[in-house]
Length: 346
Image 1 (cartoon, helix red, strand yellow):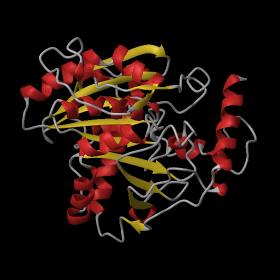
Image 2 (cartoon, one colour):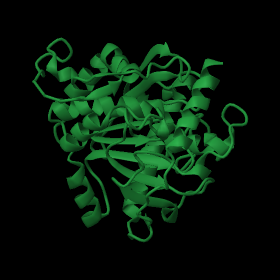
Image 3 (cartoon, helix red, strand yellow):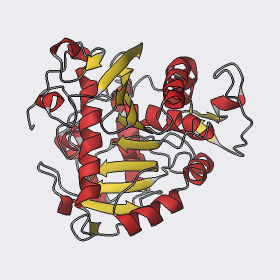
């Protein structure tokens, strides 16, 4: 009941503040950037592998049977040699708060991946959306030994549930991945997450950025995690304007905060109070409901995303608790079926 009441309130708030969605209408076909599209597909694949944690995904190379990755992609040349070094599972949220980190020697990259959820009912009713004062963990010497520094974030407020979760659970993982990056300085650090895992990816990514490790953060279908000041802080330190220039000039991204959304997916509009919570980063927008999502279905939105509302047609019916008309299908499908640890297309 609490979940249903919250969802009804959320959607009502969205309708009250509704404005037309802004869009650049520049598809990846129009920009002739198939490499850019392939990179997004690559990171969606990496995010989807985290859903195999419930199937026993463990340390080892993804292509080996003892790693317990049943997906066909794990046997493909691009992924079979990725070595999962550790998995983690913070049980506070049931499905959410788990993930893995890995090293990909052929591609010279270090991967930290947070698992999301295909359902909101595990978290939305109990989630603490109260905004609280944000301070980077690197400001305190108790989290990352030898890596503390003072960073000011004036007026920054964060979603208390996400913020407290990262502070209470993720310090050890962040430290271990930072050490791995130190041991492999020429490897690219990439943090990926879907759904609520996207929120953890961003907040963790900020810590890595404060450490000077220049990560790439790629999120799919993530909710809002902070206010305008926090998002401006993130955009400043991730140098989002430089990311925009690099993408426009080269048709690819290699650093910064990349955010992928899907038309009618409701999660990126939560929490619904735009005056308290906003988004940051460079946005790619999938404008088609069903697979396949081809390059012409992916738009570069940059920073022209909706801040204060959403179009009326996005959520036309309250109906059952999360009908397809409210974006359940869209939330689980980002260039592929990203949830479930199976090879089904739907």
